[in-house]
Image 1: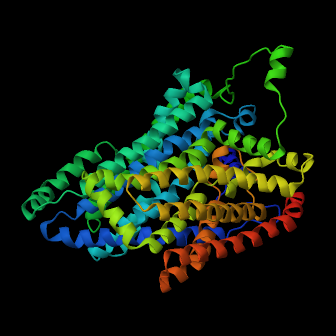
Image 2: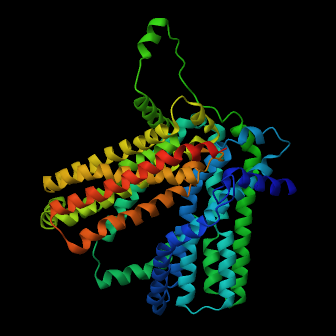
Image 3: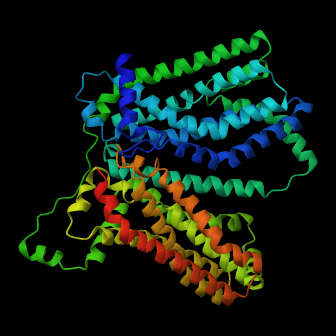
Length: 547
């Protein structure tokens, strides 16, 4: 066990920690910022659980709230666990070094399992904990319930995470297709995104269905039995629910022990399976396939030609984003998914013609406010794709290349900004095309297209400035450079503040469309000039001080 704890500490210190490490200190203050950012969602979930508990208690169906919370948390952990397990167990950069050490499979697996488990606890803080608190307040539970809830909260993620790890072990051992790392990440990631879109459309349609009182009561009467059947898919959930509903009796303690036994048994099965399959599936996994072609002099001359520095650098950045699966899914695909999610509510309604008419009428009546809304959305779109807010972090151990290229660093920074700009602006054009289909006035769309240049440049520059001050250069997988990078959240907060300052006057004074457009253009241009001067003055110094 000493080796396991040592490995856990090494994994966190080498780039899996929950904080962003710089050469001077660990920025622990970023964790409270993230917590505060998710507080509204957690409060909404907790209040819904509290209200549902009070509503269902008279008919004795309050346990449905616990079933819903535990099942939701388990499925989220299972879903995200599939990708975390792939990234941490197989595709992390430390794998080749770890395999050379005198370690057994269960020691490597258990230490990496704990690493993933810590991140899953953060997800459970947002989803499961509010359910437990809301239900406890609804039934006016005592300290025993609080103790049982805390224990279940700590143990519950082990079950779905173990269940998610087992099929990955089998796939990586027996499927040759999975050994092509890039192709496997591309396809599984895209399938997951389309699955999320399908679920979103289904839930939108379900939410728009109207139910009368008789239908609601019929649903409630069978809801508890339905939840119990669904819980069979996740061993131990029924034991956890019964231990919380009967917490003040000895049977509640018995159910709690059975829940612990279920979790321990599933984890042991996972460990036994890992002992058989892990080494055979992981050896040689950190290799990417590539086509190799022989070029003669004529072919070489045909493929090599002179380009401007800006075009070459921007294309290099965009190609890196496209060729790296995790960068492609988060930074590139995100630009196309946001317009899709923008369309989903209207498609889910079924009556697309009425949606077009309503949106066109609203845009014509409130042209200035609609322009402000599009400008604010532009800033959000530019921050959500995480291109510039992770551009320095993505350099990782190759940061020294920036220092030795025969291109001034401030020019390299501007080219990185432009790579994020072009990706965001292309997505913005798609959204404006969608709005044109919905018959939004062309004057609003033309002004929005012009203003979007300033909005995207603003958030692109704030993102790269934040990343220059606080880069995450130590990471063991590309996933950590973007998905576990708090700079993305900080850039969103910066865009929220800057956007609020810019749009507050048009929202308060309601000027005409032309005055609104001129105001947004002048203010955003002024901010961009200041940001550009900051990059000119400090970018070289900041990059050269990095190690």
